[in-house]
Image (cartoon, rainbow, N blue to C red; front, side, top):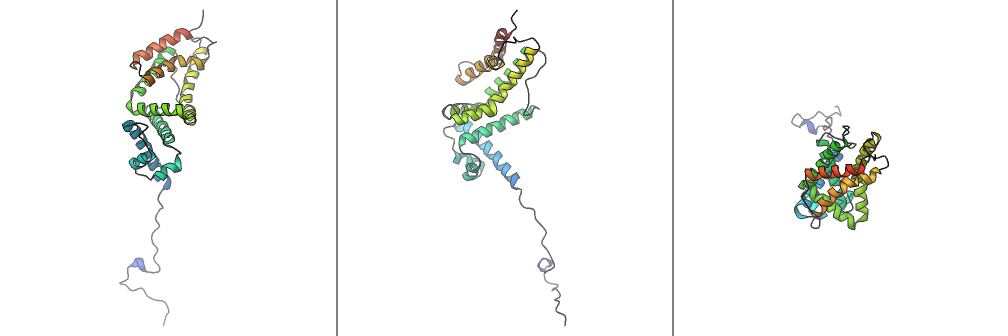
Length: 226
């Protein structure tokens, strides 16, 4: 008599020794992490806009995002760090929506005044947008009392943007449109400094007309001496 056993025809094939279960793919942890990260960014920006920075907490962000607070602490040391990364991501998305990329420059049409009006008007629109206004103010305020965060905010967001102005002014100097003795890093502050002062302190409305006037006034001082 053979030692080989014949499977009972009533036994489901899945239970026979010869049958193997189909392979199943493990969950994509990177995709899951990206979904969680995106949810955390959205939650942080929404809470800051709705409740203000002081009332925004890691616990609140976690609850809004549908994640455990330890997930947040695994990636960020504080709510300020979460907000900074969320804002950087928001800025990158806005840039992509406009067809730009991380290395976008100020346009160079050969008309410095027109190019500067274009970029300052876009800045006015962004600062007046509630989506950007609340997190921008929160980061600016926190950066004053938290030097480390302030330095990261400048390094990762502000300084790269300011360097766009530097390069455009240098191009204008090479074309003979700006005094060659002008320091571009100081010159750009004639444009962005007043704009940010009016926005931060809400002294007067922030408008395209104001941006255009800043360009006119600044270029008078930057013009080559004859």
